[in-house]
Every structure is written in structure tokens, then in C-alpha cells.
Image (cartoon, rainbow, N blue to C red):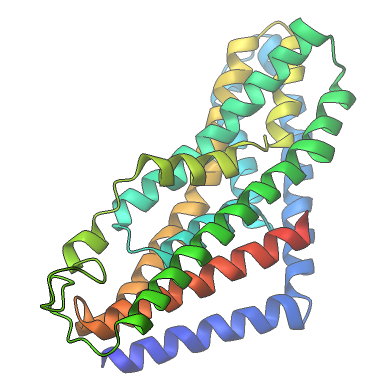
Length: 294
């Protein structure tokens, strides 16, 4: 039963990849998401005018639109899903922890937008066009480069694990990662599942958050001009939650697929090999896609 479910899941992933990159699905999805973002942005400007005029319900209507904008932003091709999904496939991370990373990454994007706008306005006197250009022309490539480096780092770790397994392939490995020769050749099942590294979290969150959402920049500049700054800041973080609604789904799916692939092998030598192969493959995939976007 588990093997059948895994085969179905892998077939679905292959079919999705063929549709996205072979049949133009990625372009269609990008067009749909961009259209949704434009519609929401136009409605957002109208609600801001209504809010400034003191109309009842305008604030909550604006917050709902901000969430929708974040959703459409995340639904299009983007790097947040790439890094969260790839990290979940490469590393054995509990679903709650990976979902938390997804939420913090999205909120980090909102925080980056707030910092960019108010630093640009008060410290450098940048215009809206200049801030948007900075985000798209400089911060976006920097973000993709950071993601590519995360991918290479994952691939390097996976390659080192495979090399270590190959070096000691003649030993019999126990469940605790040792081979009875006095030293360990890999992590135990418990150690593999306990990813507590602050460095990992900072790398994942930072690589996504470095590029602020242009919709959040649009909102923050308009609310600054209308002198309703706190509304804009609140809306930017609600956009982050809308983005997180998609990336959390990606996080859950990546963890479920990884655990399905391992099945009853957890803690065995085969599981260690599969883990290393997944880490190497996912890391290389992240790096290739991210470098192509740079």
C-alpha cells in the first residue's frame, strides 16, 4: 500500500513537472497569478481611498485584499516554494518546524519591505520607482544567488554523506550509526530527525526574506503618502501570511513525500543512503533553478 501511494505521488510530481516546464504550464500559472495581483492591487488603491475617507469596513476589506494578494503572489512561480519544498525534501525536518520556517520566511519578506520603504524614504529620499527597481534589479538576483548557495550547501552535505558511506561500505552499520569499530559513520535516526540548527533556519529564512514583495512596497508607499503608515505596515504582514498559506502547503507536502519514500526503512543503512541521495539531488535542483533565475 505504501509503495503504491509513493508511486502515485512520484507520478503526480513527474506529471506536474511536465505540465509546468514541458507544456507551458509555468507561463500560464504566472499569467494567472500576475492578473490576480493586478486586480487586487487596483482594488487595494480604491479601499485605501475609502479608508482615508473614514468609510466603515474599509480597513478589514483592505486586510482581506492584502491576504489575497499574498496568496496570488505565492501561487506564481517563486523562490519561496523552491527553497522550502527543496529543504523539506532534502532534510528530515518535522512538519511543524518546516511550516514555521515557511511562515517566518514570508513574514521576513514583509519586514524587508517595511525596512526598505522607510529607509528609502527617510534616509535616502528614494522614489517609489527607485525602490521597486532596487527590489527587482538588485535584491531579487541577490535572493536567487543566496538560494543557489543554499542548494549547493545541501548538495555538498549530501555528497559528503555518500562519500562517507562509500568509504565504509565494508562495515556493518548499527541503528545508532556506528559499525562496531569504535566510531560513527552517520547520524542515528533520532539525530537525523533532530534538525535544531539555527544556522539552517537563518539560511532558509534569509534567502527568501532578502527580496521584499513589490505589492508590499506599493502598499507601504501609498499609505505613507496618505499618512496612514500603521495600516500599510499591518497590510504588509497580512500579505506575508497570505504568502505563507501557500508555502506551508508546500512544506507539508514535501515532508509527507519524504516520509512516504522512507517508509519502514527509517534508521537503516538504506535510509541513510536514500537521505544522502535526496539531499544531493534536491540541493543540485535548487541550485540549478536558482542560478537560472539569477
